[in-house]
Length: 339
Image (cartoon, rainbow, N blue to C red; front, side, top):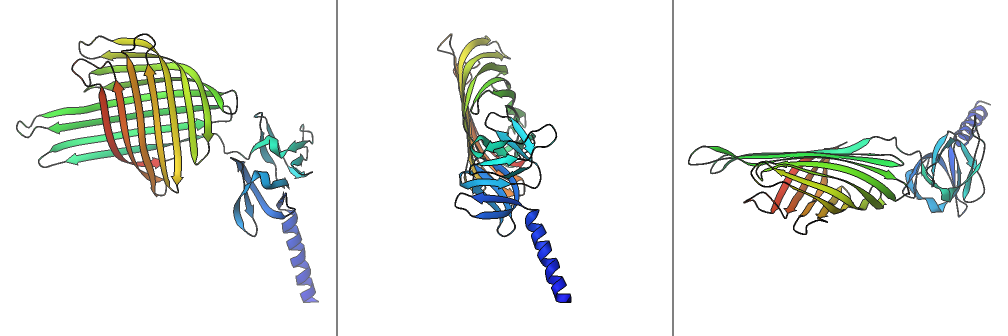
């Protein structure tokens, strides 16, 4: 009698576990119980009781159910929060709660489930060089990049600083051989899943190049080709005002340019990514005034949230300060922390 009672309780516990689990039904008729975690980039994250965490192609899912409310983001960016139940192939049926009526939702119309909360993500990178011997040099760089991405908009912030001092072996005098800083902010408003309007402003200083302030501000149109964890690529274009003021007697330059910009982030191997950001500002008033800026490099994970970074910064200005070169090229090695 005792063993019968044990078996009966085990069966009831097993049945309760199944009943209290989410379920996914596949197009081929198979079923899987567990916990629906989320949907992103066409992949359903599912914690299976038997197989652990899985990434399932959304196109393979016929329908599913949830024991707890899930957040469903539709193609038109509307949001539904409700429990869902099994429905016909290619759809789910919400249970209806409070002021929300029960309704059938096509899986093809669902683009996200349980999206991550809107928060800032980015990285801080720093590097330093100390030479003591035949060459006495102290150099340091620091940069911060952060992005806040919501369903309908995006805010991008960036700032950086680089300085270098070198001591003359003969005189012992110390001279500043690099002193650069920049700060930029951009706001993107998505009016279609991949199309957006942007407004941006960026300021730069370069003491060695006698650039007291370069201010770039403008608006335009952007297109997001890809935006996944592995690949991000967008292209932007629009009118931009460029103003360059110098600390010496060089005449200031102001002009309207046709800005063209591109941004690529590609994780082509686990824990290794490539990035290339660039912008060109051809003047619409004088063909002599041209400005191009690029950042190209690699990031490779070290441990935890720390990573190494190798990058090349290139700036070409067709109208620099008097007696200064048009081109600036910097190769930077740094240690970064992602957040």
